[in-house]
Image (cartoon, rainbow, N blue to C red; front, side, top):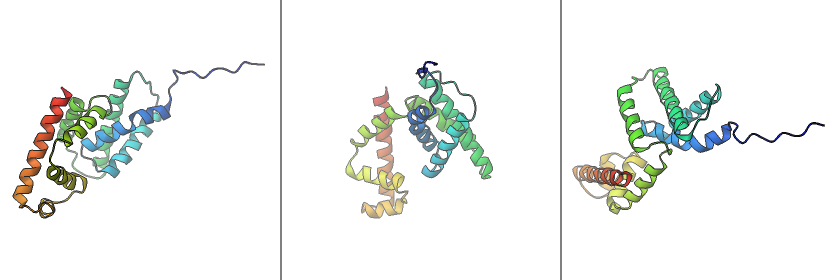
Length: 173
């Protein structure tokens, strides 16, 4: 009778790959400007593409970079199929910003810094940004909700974004 072999703990585990990197790929695609639903679809396409060919998981940083490159290519292909102008210069710039800020930790450190920095903002500024970026409200809607002029809402959001950027940069250094 043949002895049962032990599973190889170093063997590639596709489920683990997805669990470890799915959120990071999705955040990366969102940072490149994808709507949430498109980012979900392209994240799935990314993992399907990677799992359909031989894959060697060298280390977390290399794997994350490879997945981001695959997701980037999926986005550009989607834009071309949809006959949208593929503004790769803009995507390249956004991708470089992700590399500088998001790094290889799936954006966890950046997300944590954002949460801490949001707490620094006034309730009014947080609400304005939530309406704008969470609900995609127009400046007019935001101004009415905050009982201020459109110009005032614009200035409030600009100051809040500048404060967030400065705060995040200081926390990541």
